[in-house]
Length: 356
Image 1 (cartoon, rainbow, N blue to C red):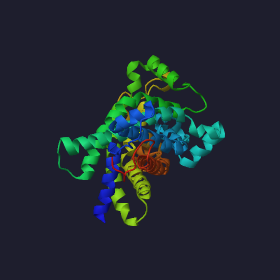
Image 2 (image 1 turned 180 degrees about the horizontal axis):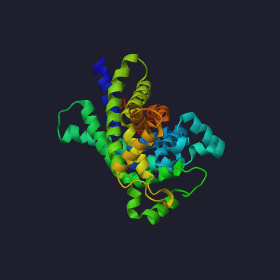
Image 3 (image 1 turned 30 degrees about the vertical axis):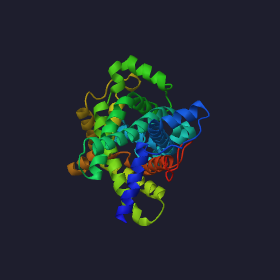
Image 4 (image 1 turned 135 degrees about the vertical axis):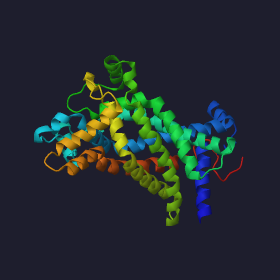
């Protein structure tokens, strides 16, 4: 029933808040004593760890597709390769996969994954934890009456903004390490941060932050709101809640990726401005948008104006195919792992059916 499905979501949210009782064990050591005496804090730590581990697991699974997507997204930053009938690299998914494997080998599909994990763990940990803190604050302290999906959107968007700003330098480094091909300019996270500050100044580590916020904040907000909605919807299938979580995560990930992909493409390109000490291609987001459109428009010069205009707009969706293939399983795995970790009884934690 709908009521039972809402109870399931409510129990999931209680676990996200860390509202699980602790086993009353005889204190035999400092660890048992600490966990028993700080049950609420342990619940918050559980939420942070579950979010971080879920994000890393999901991102590692789809790391090859992440790299293919990024390489395709930044192609319009090289307009000279589109001129005079030339065919630039990484315009199509299978072509990009073959090129990476032929030139760099199998492990190249996971290039930049270490930096990705350094960024992903704190980012998803803060997002999941902050979302639940905000959700609890809106529900209990502000006593605001609003639909569940709206509350979820506001809570997740707020936590995403905080996580994005806090972890943005690592996000920038992750992008630049991932799109490197045969010629490497950056050698690791620390080296990349050092060279970015040296080449572009301290502001360089936050290059592209405004479009990133415009992309990530609504994306995460919609992702959580859609997840809650689809979690209830898939309850009609009559399968285990963990399956609901997997399906709801995959569906919400695909939907949100399609809606906000053009913004994500622009923010990736802004992150690449000044890459490797090169001259700045764009001075603003507006210039980036204009260049992306012009690249597609000028490339299709053999057709009429309307066809060229369509090609210009299509350039904003360059890399959407691998993004969808990536985002759907990544989101499904992330929410599924998070759900499983929260619903497992951790050491020294009382099972849900026991009373304190």
